[in-house]
Length: 520
Image (cartoon, rainbow, N blue to C red; front, side, top):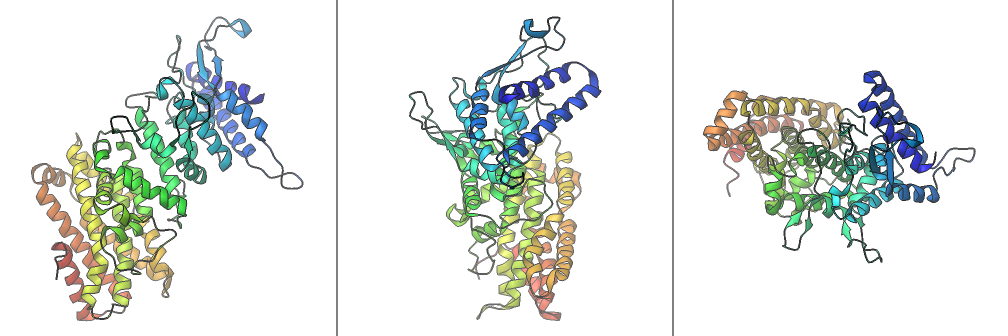
């Protein structure tokens, strides 16, 4: 078919099936689209053949695809009385709009996806109306869709499909957000700009930051679809994992850690706060921020207080969050915690790290420091994270129209995300001499402590936030003190502390968390 005809077929399948033929045709057409997507993805990967080094789609085909991406594709109304070559087109799109829907499925070659993605962005940046320059639905069948995924939008904003493709291909996502477009020699070429800045806020002439404007892509508040897809892509780029996978955090590369550093610096900036809050331009990123924070919780806990060197082992490259500043870092955690899923990711991962920190501190307290002092030092970073997360939880409930429903969603998310505790604990305690069986017991105790103190009656919490926020935050601090006390007892026993000494240590941890770690 060639590149352009393949794009035309994919788009026409969507237009036809979404407007005519019923559910059976829709299901079949979606299956054909998905097969085309995965076939293209596979074809971008070299390998196979007798020698194992076959080249499937060379540079000539990529050039043809990029050329077709910028050209109009004429589609037809399936119910038009005029058919065949004489039929007048009812819908005209650009090739990249069709291609973006193909990128949603499959594992693509990293270089292919980043090259095509950069060219799509540069094409958009060169348009007079920017993101508003892509053709939308036209003609009498304006309800037609190009993308047939039930929750994926209508398929006319190509950046939605690109972001979904990047979220499925983490290595390409890392390269993409660390890359840039523009700066060519042509007179009309856009200025050089990083992709990170283009999507998350480029500096304007008046000094303000402006993120990409996401056109509505079908349905009420449909621009949130694109922003959520962008959050997934950024999550994949910083963590090296496809969002939602069941594996625990992996060691971060320097490129991933540097990108997370930039993400915290940008999204935790005070200038960005109105956009990050409930109803703000970038609020759909909140849950993804929580997932990123969970992946980098070691780095966050090292930076949020003055943690002694060596107490918390590095896991891959350090994101150097201490250079971001405690205010920005705290703001990032608060903003992420306005979303129930973001909050749950942060709380579970933080308590898993706190268990490791307290165990290490009590197992080998530094000279001149008591067991109680060492345990409290291990609890302090997590308690500071929990304090910021509590503020975010209060903000999220306070801003919701249905405050009781919002409070209930926090309970549900804590239960849904509980597997994070096991993943985080196993990263640290599972590697110690006594092994992962003991780590599983610790994880169970941490989960029980968190659920026991943070899952609360929704009506009571909603009323407390609305009428007495200070009381709510006080109760959250005491819940954290109780949780840390129970974690201290569990891991202290694993560190060899017993009997009355363990009780004293646990009580000391409770007192220091509840008092906000006053200077001694």
